[in-house]
Length: 93
Length: 274
Ligand SMILES: C[S@@+](CC[C@H](N)C(=O)[O-])C[C@H]1O[C@@H](n2cnc3c(N)ncnc32)[C@H](O)[C@@H]1O
Image 1 (cartoon, chains in turn cyan, green):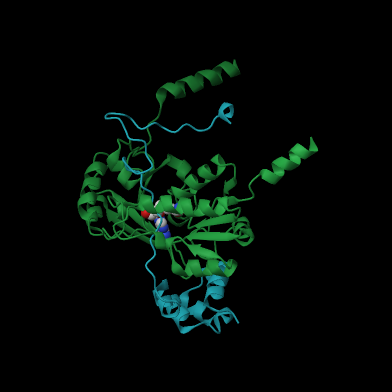
Image 2 (spheres, rainbow over the protein chains, first blue to last red):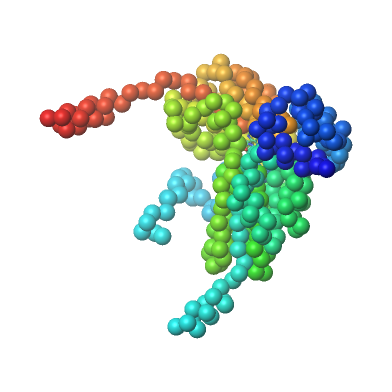
């Protein structure tokens, strides 16, 4: 029997299931034993209901910091232009 | 000779690192090669967008270590990302095969994957990055955009304010991290409005206020559909824009012909015919 994670993976890998309408997906044989949380999530079209099964956790998204003065940067001289990084050419390999 | 080759092999550190992406949508985007890196690693570090995705990874490997606990309230993100590089390198130096898993493409708008590869290589360890399907790839498919049709610029929203970028309004412009503009650490939400007013001011140097822009979120779970919202540029400062959304500007001016080069091309063609 597939549990919720296996079922999500199976839906993600199946062109028929991935784009099925929610009402068809919840009726699909692959989902015969799906949990209530998963069926609700499918009906609602988002993962909020999965918190009932897995708990919820605030996840931070990786973000880049491209502003000047960040911790990894060389201090900039006043009026300095940032150096464009040069692609590695064959002679610098 | 043989013995020196052997001694080099014996001394070469066995530790290595592979930075891979799981793509954006659970189950749909993980490449066979990325999965293999995960399965063959001694230790897996994870910086993914969703706790369900993290649990899914745990199915693939018994030692998945979340990088989430390194974030902290009020702690600059760059401090967190430096720590990530250090924890990963500690395992590499201990001789482990390390796999670092990021959502999307590990090398797109991300600092630590590039950095850890640079540090590992500088210390003589094998290090590589495997591409993954990014939000960029998904938006081309979901919004029906071909970046080659008019050209396509990708810019980070804060960087657009800090630096004098030239926007090309004849092509598409994709603005990343609009929901995070001016936000260097966690839990400073609510500061976005003022920063976004400045962003609007900058954008109106190149665009009309009534330009229709698209706010896009691609599916992260395979039971979701992409979220595509359209609004006018002037609505941008007050729109709800999450950390998981990207703003797309359509071409706002026609491409201009380059008469000088067209004539030179024609001259070349004529020369060849003659
Ligand atoms: C630091 S970047 C990481 C991008 C990621 N490495 C990738 O390959 O797509 C974070 C930004 O990616 C974009 N992003 C993240 N998740 C997204 C999603 N589900 N849909 C659309 N854009 C997303 C947003 O612009 C967000 O501010």
